[in-house]
Structure formats: structure tokens, C-alpha cells
Image (cartoon, rainbow, N blue to C red; front, side, top):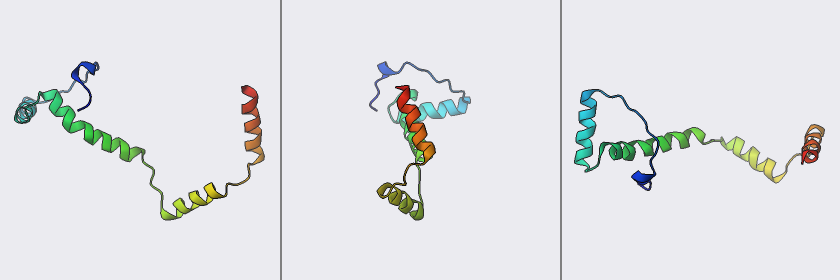
Length: 92
């Protein structure tokens, strides 16, 4: 893991049963890790995958083609867009 223990300043409290704590401690010992390192090693990849999946936009083939077409041939700006651009440039 790239993050060193010295760089970890925030804390998370975790409530577990005695059996869950015993199981985590045993698993960590088998991996020759402390419980925190064991949890971080196993939970962070899952958290990264969940966040990546939730933040990813998946387009259908039709939508992808439409986006590419719009990028290659953008529509002319509408009067409202031109007015917004003028207002924005005047604020600077």
C-alpha cells in the first residue's frame, strides 16, 4: 500500500461483535498484518471499484454515435447561449 502509517491522521470507528473481531484478528495474523492494515488492504480496492463504477457514464452505441456526431459538427450557438457568454465575459 502506498500510504504510510505516518500519513494516516483520520480515524474511523468500527463496531463489531466479539466473534467478528476475533475473525478479523485471526485473518490479519495469518496474513502477518495488523487488523487496520488487513482491513485497508481488503476494503480499499472494493471501495475504489464501487466509486469508479458509480461515477462512470456508459453510453449506448446510438448515444455514442450522437455524441461523436455533435463533436464533429457542433450546432450553432443559440441566442440564449450567446447572451450567457456575453454576460460571462463582462464579469471578468
